[in-house]
Length: 126
Image 1 (cartoon, helix red, strand yellow):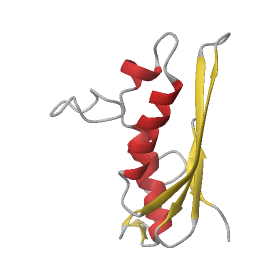
Image 2 (cartoon, helix red, strand yellow):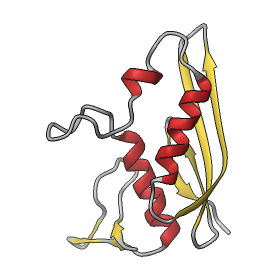
Image 3 (cartoon, rainbow, N blue to C red):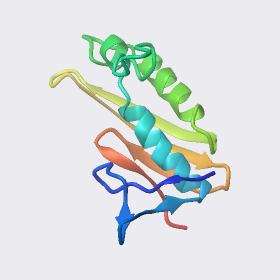
Image 4 (cartoon, rainbow, N blue to C red):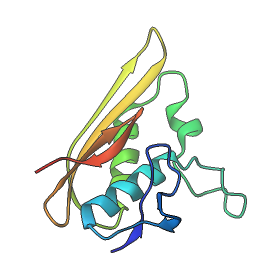
């Protein structure tokens, strides 16, 4: 499994004008998971069904937390290189109408990937 490395702002990482490749399974999975969770349903003009249905289920009044967890679980398990989900935490602040989530998953090589809303997915140091 190989992908392009990304900077913290999601730009492709360049070193001396060359694209940097990542071949660690956990690092690749963290990058793919980050990208998938930033891909909003309806964003891709050739197939508006692709992406996470944030506007349909997340950005609504009184969202169903169990459904949100299941959607996140489906996205995480669709990422190549993720073997299992350790934990998905979701919270809803009714006063501010903000939902947030954090995810811990195990990559196929045993490393732990962590991240969530407002924070990138990274591989925990061993």
